[in-house]
Image (tube, rainbow, N blue to C red; front, side, top):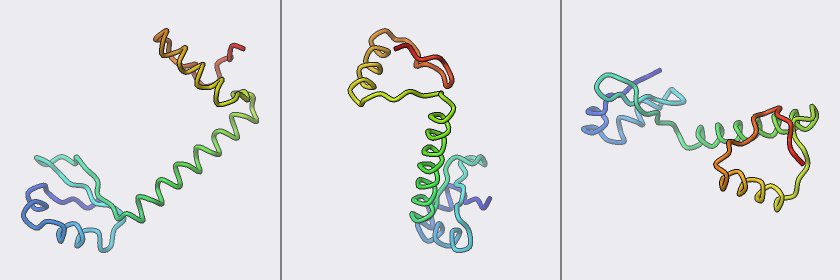
Length: 100
């Protein structure tokens, strides 16, 4: 992964980022020699967000098909979440049996 030092970014500004991103999807910004941040073009960021949503959708469909989920209304879902928060109970893990 291409890297840019924080000092370089500070002295050259956005032009250093633009030059580094010219032929790459993302660039790491290093602080004291260690990668700390990633910078990418906004279109690449949007693409990654869409891919995450698509993966979550596929996982939800797989969970429903395998019985790892149950249909509930939004009201039921929020009531369950509020109960868990009020009791400081951890949410059920994936695949755990749901209480009716």
